[in-house]
Each structure stands twice: as C-alpha cells, then as structure tokens.
Length: 458
Image 1 (cartoon, rainbow, N blue to C red):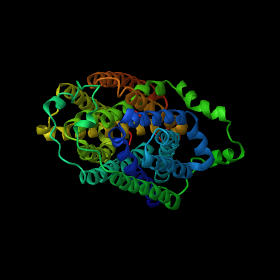
Image 2: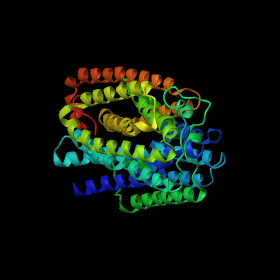
Image 3: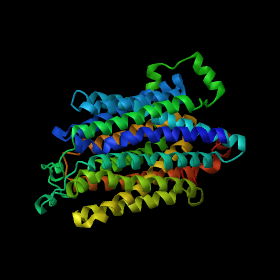
C-alpha cells in the first residue's frame, strides 16, 4: 500500500504545482487580455485543441510512452502556455493555447488510467473491492489537486493587490453587472487600473517555475505502471495504426452508457466555464474589481478541495445517486439566485457564498463522474477517459465561445437546461446498470470491479 499511496501522492502534488499556475492564468485571461477578446479567444482555442487531442492522442501516447512519461511530456505543454503569456498577443497566446490543448487530453487520460490501474492492482492483492479503492484514490487526488486553485489565486491576488488603487464604482456601472449585464460594455473598465508589466512578469515567472517543478517531480519520483503484462508485451510488438487509434474514441460511443453520459460530461465544462469566465467577470470584477477575483476563487477551491475528500469517503455509504442529487439541487438553486441577484459592493459576503456552493457541487461532478467512468468502462479505460475529456472540452468551447455574444441571463438558462438534460440521461444510465447488474456478477468480478450500481466514484 505504501508504494501505491506514494505514487498517488506524487501525481497529486505534480498536478497541484502545474494547476497552481494554469488555474490562476485561466481565471485571469479575460481580465488581463481583454483587448479584442484575446483572453476568451485563447481559452476557446485551447479547449478546441483539447477536443482534437481527445480524439486520437491519449491512446497513442499512453501505449507508446506509458502513463508516467505521457504525464511528464504533457505537463511541458502547460509550461509553454505560461511562457506565451509573457508577451501576450494573437501570435503567442493562440499557438501556445493550441499546444496546451494538445497536451491536455493525454495528461488527464494518463492520470485517470494510472489511478484506476493502481487501485485495481492494490485491491486484487489486498482482496478488497476495486471500486472502493479507486474511489479513495480519486478522492485523495482531488483533495490535493483542487487546492491548487487556492495557491494559484492567492499568489495572483497578493501580487496584483500591491498595485490596485481603490476606484469608486458608480451606480450606473453597477447596473451593468449581474445576469442582465450590458454586453457592449467591458466590465474591466469599472475596476482598478491594470497591474504593471513588472508585476505580471513576476506572477508569470512564479507560475512557470511551478510547472517546471511539476515535471521534475513526475520524472524523478513516479513509478511506471502496467495494466496487464500480456497486453503490454503485445503492444511492444505491434503498434496500432493512426486511424485505428483515432477511431477508438468514437467506437467507444457504441456503448449506450457512454452516449447517455455525454450531457453530464459536457455540463462539467459548462459549469466550470461559467464560473471562471462569466461569474468572475460579470459579477466579481464588475462590482468589486479584478483584485477580488483571486480571493473569490480561493473560496471556491477551498470548498471544492475539502468536499472532494469528503464525498470520496461518504460515497461508500450514500451511493453516487444521492450525491448527484445534492449537486443538482445546489447548482439549480445557485442558477436561480444568480438570475435574481443584482451584485453590489455592500453585499461582499454574497460574492463568496456563490463560489462556495459552486465548489460543493463541482466536487461531486468531478469526483463522481471521473470515478463513474473508471467503474463503468474498466476494460476500455483509455478510450473512456478520452471521451470524458472530449465532451467536457466541448462544453468549455461552447461556454467560452458564446461568452462575449450573449447576456449572462441567457447563459444561465442554457446552463439550467443542460443540467436538467444531464440528470435525465444519467438516470437512464443508472436504470440500465440496475437492470443488467443482477445477470453479470461473474464478468464484473473478473475485472475486480463490482457492478457500479451502488457507489460513487472516487
């Protein structure tokens, strides 16, 4: 157990360092690079590249390089994005966004594959339930990983607050904040002056250093892992062709359960995109100023991190269905409240309540959906997790794509509609599993994972 736990911790802290940088940069893109929508455009291009990457790169790289070196190599793509921000323009940010997007899918697929294999491997030796161990591993990972938002946003807020000068925001400008925002206005103009280049370079230098440390941590301390000895020997002798690997992701859509999980997976992209792209800009930056973005997102990350561990543990007793119901009710309540609320600086506490509740529900979407994929598709992990990143990225692309075109209230209605559809199709998956599980005990036992009808994922 010590060796498996060590590897889980190495991956977790590697992702912590990497996403301390990327998470902070993502939340600031629309504010730092608002000219001609460069920041939002870079994020949209990034996730579009991630979609293309999800189609074919994960199986190829994982089979050729193994999970360890796929993770290390993909992390280098994130470092390139940090470097591109040093001189932000259409000629630097867009290409580095493409590079990051291409590395994103292999990174997450390799991580999910590694944790799933490690969990099943330990469960087999210890004669424990594979599903429980996988849930625990993902819970530990997300506890550490989600805290990256705390450190990344804390660093940016502390640095930028040194240069912020208090600006009185007029009632006329405040009228453009919230769900019925003024699309033609740039909310950044209501906040404090932009930070100096020296402060921006300091921040980017810290973020780039974090990325380099993450790569070194994985390369030096992470053990290589194999899913099955016979299969790996086969892979050495014959490498799948480009097209067969390209089609593997789409062939996985023949599984009805995968098709039904598409709305739920896309919703993960929608809700994260709304918080980082719309809530931070139209509510926080508009009414309080850019230097508050980091502090508000720290609240989100802190709650998300703690709830990830909590739900990974209690899912064994509550089952995943109850947790998904909790996330649905929480998100629905937040969406309705955001439609009705007019943000004002005097209501400072409210700005933190929404990201806290959003963090609670996002912890469920992340841990439970990731684990659900690992449990339902244990025999086709690479293709399944590639689909996960594909459809989640598609949700991000849509969310960032219409970010500057639609008013926030329309985006909230879209978010609510996707959430309702997600729960309907997820319910269909649970129905199919409940219907098929009594007749397939031997098959699931052979894979070291029980029928995924009763538990949550992480």
